[in-house]
Length: 299
Image (cartoon, rainbow, N blue to C red; front, top):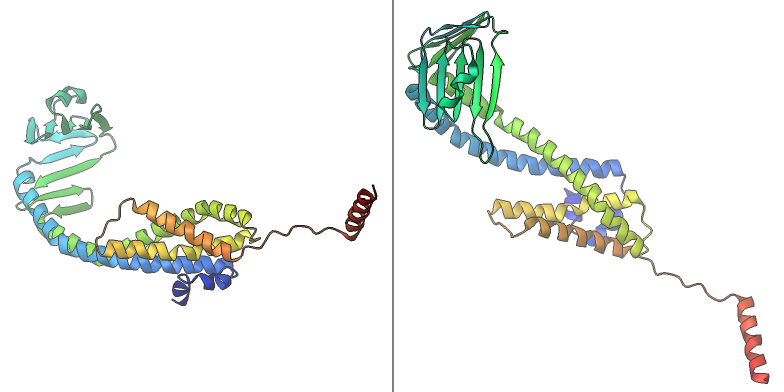
């Protein structure tokens, strides 16, 4: 925690720049862990607040749209049930079961977006903006046995020894498990994303450090420039966190972030700048210049 406070003090960089690079990278990992922990906690609260509503909506979808679907049986790659055509439409999406149709492409024109089941194929068609519909056809030959049966509150899905019931009770249990694992999953995802993005940021902006180091004649080693860059990440990142926590949006925030970061690197390197030495005249050069002056006077 002391190093976090030191990163806001320009004078402290005189000591921070000479740390082992491995320790500085460990600090960066610790700092990104703190940020990830904060945002994972915040997101977990949001998820736990929204999950009951999602479970209720899922229950409504099951009750209104799925329980009236006929039993579907696929055996040895062939659709056995239903034996009659079935079609249901939800706004722009359709479910079409055509067990007697061998050519899956014949049902494509019936809807802009659909999920279709024919005698030997499963076909999907999705409409995307400003481009043609995406069509995918899957062969059922790898399915030995699959049975989908409507039950009172949902559907039952079985394949060989595998079986589960998709019901509101199942969805509620699933949501509770998601709530338990939400925090560690979010923490790991955020930590990996943030840590590697900071590393990319560090090495990219080290180009500016090299330029300042050369221009200011600071004679710092690349390892020292990386150390400076690691600790200089803290102030702008902290500012970004504060703005997000307060729900304040700064215009072109990435420009503000980058400007603060580059200026901080510049000021730290400037502390190590050395004056450019102008070579003095040697004694022989002085004598030669003196004799030349004397001759000019005699003339």
